[in-house]
Length: 248
View 1 (cartoon, rainbow, N blue to C red):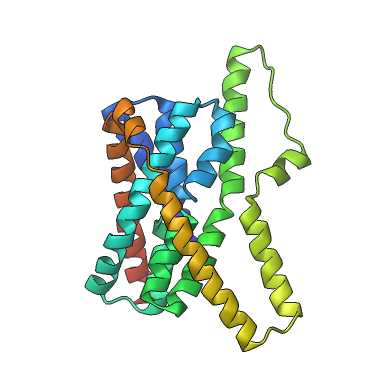
View 2 (cartoon, rainbow, N blue to C red; view 1 turned 60 degrees about the horizontal axis):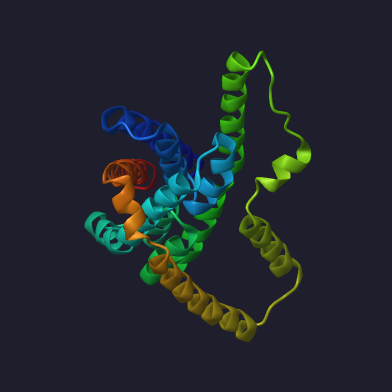
């Protein structure tokens, strides 16, 4: 699985960079699209946008682009899974490795099966952990760029800043795993948690729909959407090929 996730990161960042050579949008915008597609959509964009000094409009357009393809994934991934005859395990990895945001990963995978949902959730949260090294890489690139233009002045990165890079939901996920391991939970409790989680995921998907701002996309033009589509499609193809290679 780690090989697949690493390939996702490399593919998304590389394709978004190369696609921007053709469509020529603001480099910060294409960078945010690549990072959002590679890791966890809006969370990754929010974490890295201040580092590259992206403005509010670039953040809004890149996040909206992520949400568009997260919604597309809800319809496309089941078709892909059926076309290739994926098992629950294979489909869970597909969803966790290729869908942009966590809510859509959970919705897409649990619609297939509970086992696929559990695997997709772990895959997605493992993928989210890549946010730390990728963000540090962005910081290093900025430091190097500044060193060439500001007489070797550079940013300092301390331990507190590193901790702030870790998304809160990953911390809560690890805490929940530790809690469930230490404290035995009855079937009635886990069943209640499951029902509540599905309700919350439904509400999250509604919020995703409200988060799509058509006017922002119109203002930025179609190019960012195309870059996002090319990048996400490339990731999806790579994930399918690697699943076929390693799991069949």
